[in-house]
Amino acid sequence: MPASSMPVTAPEPQRRRITELDALRSLAAINLVLFHFTHVYAVKFGFSTPLGGEWPYGAYGVMMFFILSGFVNSMSLMRRGRPTDFLVARLIRIVPLFYIAIVANLVICRMAPLSGDPITMGQFLANLTLMPRVFGYQCVDPVMWTLQVEMMFYVLLVVLMRLGGLRNYFVGWGVLLLGSLTLCPTLDLLKTEYSDATWFAAGTAVRHLLALDFAPLFAIGFLLYQIKTKTGRLSHNLIGILVAGTVFHCIDHGKHNPAATMLITVVVTAAAWGNIPVLRFRPLVFVSGISYAIYLCHNNLGCVLMNTFDKAGVSPVMCLLIVIAFSFSVGLLVTRRIEQPITRRLQALYQRIQTPAPGVCATE
Image (cartoon, rainbow, N blue to C red; front, side, top):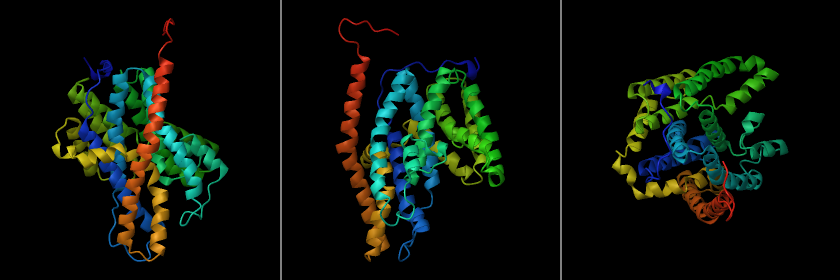
């Protein structure tokens, strides 16, 4: 039977978390922190004296995170079997802490060195939608652009399931990859001359809504999950991964090294099959548990703190160590005291809503 006619993986019973994938998520978070506090900070604001080194590989952490997301969220949706449960679980996990971070940034962004570009009301309201770039606004915290892409992927995954694009997944993902291969380069080519045109803005909005720049990475993760669950022909799935990777490198303007893409795909694959024992290192798993809070809280707040210590005469290396320790401490505090209690309460509320009252029959 061709892979495109294979059924979507049936809902599975709960299994243990794949520890190695959690560890990879923590490595992606650590990579991001190092990238922002060494390379990005040095480029945007500069240290009073040279830091002595940079970590410029942030793009590869994002790449790994999106491939991971393609695998993990495909697994989550297919195991749950109900798109509504999947989306609600994702929203409960992401939205409350995101809104708290957005409000906190109204204060943080007034401080040096971020104070030169104040947040407008339009930008603030657009950020509350979790997809400001669709409306032509920048993220309040530059790091949050990846969250917009992630949210659009959740919606796309559910839409694909509803339309049968995960059952006939070479058709569903093929349409998205074709969109990536045609729309992204076209808009990039015409940007200089037509950036003010209404049709260009509409095309850009479609590009962001469908996450076309990163759909190939999500597709790689999805196809790895199909291989993991023995869905479809192995040869077809491997060819699909090769095609997705090729499309990604056709539209990314040489920003990523194809060898790095291959290496990251191999590492994610080995982790998904539980073949990297070193990734069971407990501190890595611990960092994974607080990675979302670190992601939301480290960048703008860390830049303000870095600037404060740097202007006070603290050496750049010591500034870096202080800010990294501070970011992870804030991540732990926010996770334990804010994120987890809110998540538990909202999950309990959703369960009560889903559970019929005594004597009431549940209907489809």
